Image 1 (cartoon, rainbow, N blue to C red):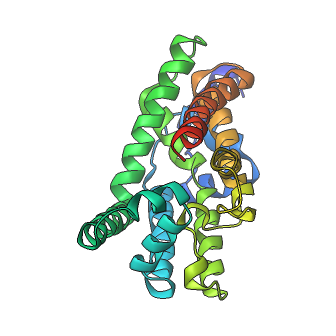
Image 2: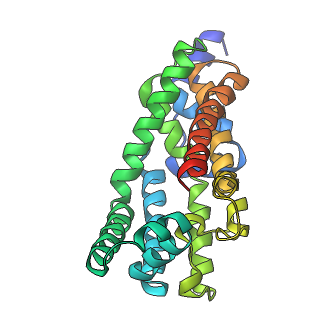
Length: 253
């Protein structure tokens, strides 16, 4: 077979199915990202899996804890917030708690919008960085699809959190800030730990770091740059937001 024939076969070879890409993201991620680079950019299946597992977790919170209790817990596990709210008159306190509860519920049940918006914003930052700082040639669309597949380890966090809920966690002990045993923060008591240290420990999450590694690999692949450039672009942004978050916790608790 001539070189021209080999090239022709390669050009018409079918891409991976979405299920194959999902399987490869956990076993051979480069295959998934190379497939995306070739122009196969369907992303609805990982999106559905992320949203579905989030709703499974939300159902667990609803039936095992209750959103009112989850709100009380969130306030209790944040001593500065609890102290500030304790100074309010009873009617204002109740209104404030209801506002927090509805915000939590609304954000949770708007997961499809939240996931899509978060992916769009993160992808924009990564796309700009990898192209304009590291000389990459990624398209925004490919970067967004890479993010969607790279986010798949998050389904394990949601499922683990659901298992913990149904395994007998007392409703008053549920902490929505660390709902699954995937971060160092999940093993610390927020009432006995410095707020900044607790926030830092919460950022050191196994599934999140796994996703960041995948995002670095995928970004470098679709941009046609060294893998180290992808890691620097991804972890650089992560480090910036982590420092801001930890600093905010140190100042405002």
